[in-house]
Amino acid sequence: MIRFDIVTLFPELFGPHMASGVTRRAFDSRQVQVRLWPLRDFADGPYRRVDDRPFGGGPGMVMLAQPLQRALEAVHAERGDLPAVVHFTPTGRTLTQAQVQEMAAGSGAVLLCGRYEGVDQRFLDRHVTQEVSLGDYVLSGGELPALVLLDAVARLQPGVLPAPSHEQDSFSDGLLEAPAYTRPEQWVTPAGALPVPPVLLSGHHAQIAAWRRGQSLVLTAKRRPDLIAAARAAGRLDEADERVLRQFAPDDTL
Ligand code: SAM
Image: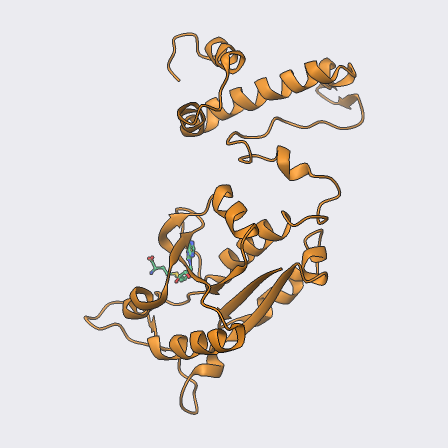
């Protein structure tokens, strides 16, 4: 069982996602438990204030340390352990499938969803163990990143996907996944009939596997040469893979 404690100003954003799609199984079966902690419950005063203006001036508001501290103490008291504390921020390290796999095999974490211009740095310095970004763009809050992490972890739980299809997903072996095709074998369009690659209809499993590996390598080389370099450095490319890559880039530019 994995337990995520989510500290957020918008707990209502989580329910619909957890009740939909295949990942719902992970939440219904409590393989992934989610406990929501509405941050305003830990704020002071009649207005339950959770933010204030930044020292030194500048636009926007900053989340106060004190309500976050109280929320974290409540989480610790209820859980009885000190889990990882993840803060979602564009200044963090970009989330990878390797991190998701690690989380999926762990016991959970506290997820802090930022809002406004971010969180008082003193709280982050004191309590946060991981800063995670979704990518090089700015969202209005950490709730979508938290949902992304929940979804990615939930689909890796045993029995959630009908087959172990995530083993072939992009990034699970460090490469992008090969393209997929389904019926009809000939898709008739105004631009002409578009066939499925014949090898996929051959029933020859070894040839299909080799074709998929080749497609995966070439797609990764085109779009994410950094992943090819990492796979090579990790010794995950064999001689057959290198032959495919040389055909794709005979001048050895990869
Ligand atoms: N002022 C911050 C900056 O420039 O780095 C951006 C704050 S953003 C408007 C509000 C909150 O959204 C952040 O505190 C963070 O929790 C979340 N957020 C925005 N973009 C994100 C990203 N790319 N990855 C993870 N969290 C993000």
